Amino acid sequence: MARRTERIALNAPTPGVDRHLTVHRYGAPGARPKAYLQAALHADEWPGLMALHHLAPLLDAAAAAGEVVGEVVVAPYANPLGMDHRIGGVVSGRYAYDGSGNTNRNWPDLAPAVAARLNGPLSGDAAADVERVRGVLREAAADLPERTPMMQLRKILTQLSADADHVLDLHCDGEAEAHLYANITGEERARALAEEMGIEIVMLEEEAGGGAFDTAPVQFWRRLAEVGVEGAEALGAPCFGTTVELRGKADVSDDLGAADAAGLLRYLVRVGVLAEAARDRVGPAPDAAVETYRLDAVDTVNAPAAGLIAYQRPLGARVSAGDVVAVLIDPAAEPGQDRTEVRTQQTGRLFTYNEHRLVQPGDRIVKVAGTEPLSYRKLGALLED
Image 1 (cartoon, rainbow, N blue to C red):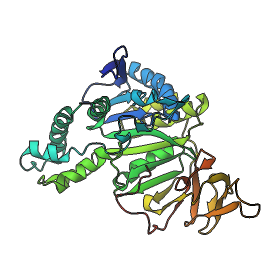
Image 2: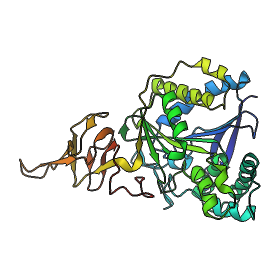
Image 3: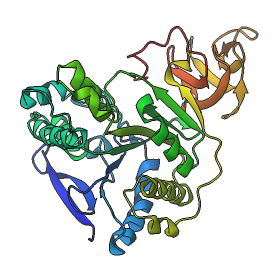
Image 4: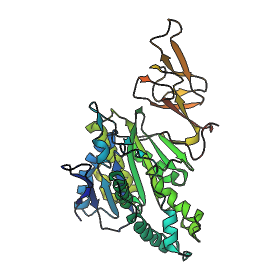
């Protein structure tokens, strides 16, 4: 079955402006497993756009050869509203201009609405119950409000992804090694994705908090039991969701995009969305020593004052608690008093930088992934805004 491409009309912010969301669909509607992939929900993060650009012809070829076993839904750019948010020629893209905040936070919790619609216990047949719940979930998503352009976009993206088996949300950091985030229930799939993409760093959490896009469809299944759906505990974790951080904002190239697309294709084969024959179109997975870390063991090192950053350790460096990872320089201070050392509290791997070299107090400078949970990192409040 050939690719089907939709142009979903979006509300115009002003007369004379037309907006739409492009969505590519592969495979028979409703076929399982279903994978949903999107890029640039944070509209200033573009490596995912390049990855999906290179994935499209691979999926086209797989569709032409009859190798799409399940269903694949791709939003090559997830936030056309944010892509137009320019100030002085710079795309801001991370926060909605309507005042609703970070576009990757506070995605809807549909468990209460689904519980109300179910109006009674599940049957006890896990496979049948999962499909029943998914049907009701689609109904609940269709009833989400769409009063504003951003509310409408959130509703559409939720409808596209809420019932998927695999939700892959492609992002990037400022400057970083490739890494990904996932709920601990999806550890096996997270490791599989990391292996196929050559990603060495996997962050796992029980409850990140913040309502990120990829966590909403995962937490939904846990929340069903919490809101009183009898028998929901037996459903397990039907959805795997992940945020894939494709290095840093400047890491946009054909070579990187093609490598990322190959990894995504290999993962879709590995989890049965595509037939094994599709793997022959890309090379083998790169060697990667995948390491898993708890998200509450990631030290998010913040700037204690304003200044110019001079990083002291390279990305990927192994550091120890107490090591100096950066120096803040105050150009207005007296010589000899113009450099402030910034140290990490964690022993582990330094894997991100702030892409800006002039920072203000409280700005995140680096992240260090370790193994020992840090007391200031709290369950339900683990995401940086």
